[in-house]
Image (cartoon, rainbow, N blue to C red; front, top):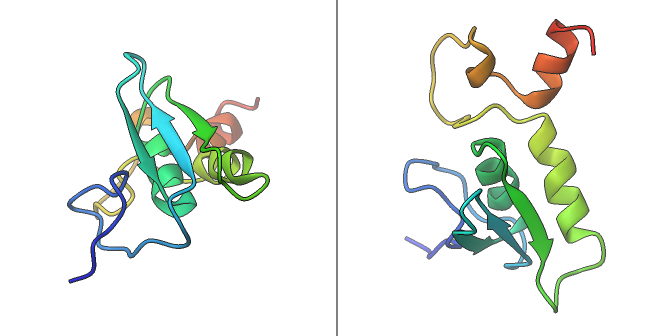
Length: 99
């Protein structure tokens, strides 16, 4: 099996997309470097997470990961009904609450 970036959750079956380009930090400043794909999925699963481009990142990498995370449900690789706000994407919650 190919190695995946540190931002890839062990239960997330998806492969990396592109190079390791960003760092995702949680509220306590613990972080993981990752490809844009896994960074977005990780960011979507955190409350108060942030993303920063690494020095050699392609232009716009952090913005792309941040924007993608908005529409991704937390722990999106877990199947099952998703009805609670904590289980929905930020975009879904904004739509539900008319924001």
